[in-house]
Length: 209
Image (tube, rainbow, N blue to C red; front, side):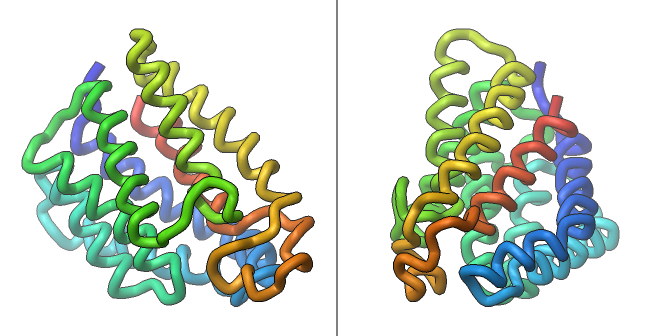
């Protein structure tokens, strides 16, 4: 069953609520190994996204993602703005000017978006970043899509993988970003970007199917 532009807008609006509700939690996670601003930045950024989408006539999926990307890049500081901005910019390039996307295109969209983040952040699996969630999630999504699973089944399993991968970042030593300056002291804490990425995937499961 295809997703449409209204579902995409609901996803983005849901993210505004999710990051507002978890602003303090994400910031506390970031205070242990980062700049103590991850939740604050995402809350500010997605609040701006909601305002922008409400103020403009958004008719296509690509336009929704493109506006989200530009708003996040303009309004979010630290690494979050460029990385999440890149995610949505790559998603927009895949979506183009369509108002609906089928399951295979949605999975490809996620894949291209994550490849964009990987290139932008110059990181990979095992560096204790958001990619420790995104890379395994996309691998599972592609595997399930190729075996004929529905988007609902794919996103349901994506949440399971994402939650597991957040836990997997706890014993990792950070190799990228501010957390990498802590060396061994970065061990023992979940990665904030991995955690906020998991929340993004949960919100997709709740709104896109």
